[in-house]
Image (cartoon, rainbow, N blue to C red; front, side):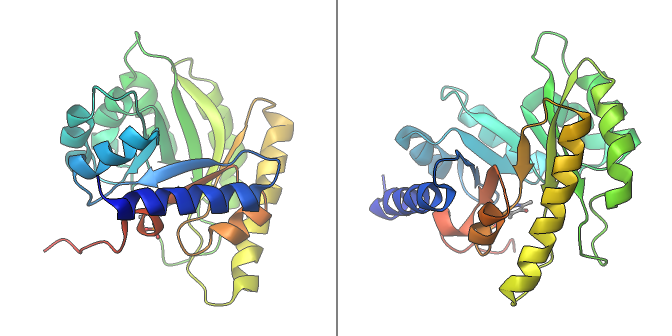
Length: 226
Ligand SMILES: *Cc1c(COP(=O)(O)O)cnc(C)c1O
């Protein structure tokens, strides 16, 4: 067990608790590119929520950690042909942005499992990104998720474009908060606003995030895939 990971986890949790005040903000440890051994070390400390971006990379790691009671979040781009694996092996799908994906996840969620937790990903300010729906599309997508018994609508997710100016970053988070409040008015049991990563989680929490997704600040810089 590396001291570095322990220190990073403690630092991260303390900072999150300080920033969140009396609210509880859920920490998802983003473990893409990290080994199963690394995930197991963090799980042994008590971290429960882990996020992965690629199905092929995630499945062997999920299997290798099956003796820990972990909650897996799919946070990467979601294609229809990946929906079976996501619905089977994950507890949350955070990157849901179109009808076809909603219906495929609903169809493939095993009947013996609790409903799959779904967040609708919103493309709040990044015109170059192909992931995420437009803000206008949220109500219809949310109604569609809610119409499936095998899915549970939990809220919204966003990855705002990185911007060096903290005011601009806060603007995107504030826009998400407005959308989230509107969604809650329509679906009272919605309880999750997932936004904030290693570089911007302080602003995200200040604007009402209930869940942050943190990789680099926990595990150190990612080594790019060769
Ligand atoms: C990689 C990733 C993160 C974590 O990013 P860091 O900057 O390493 O904290 C969070 N959310 C999504 C969707 C990601 O792909």
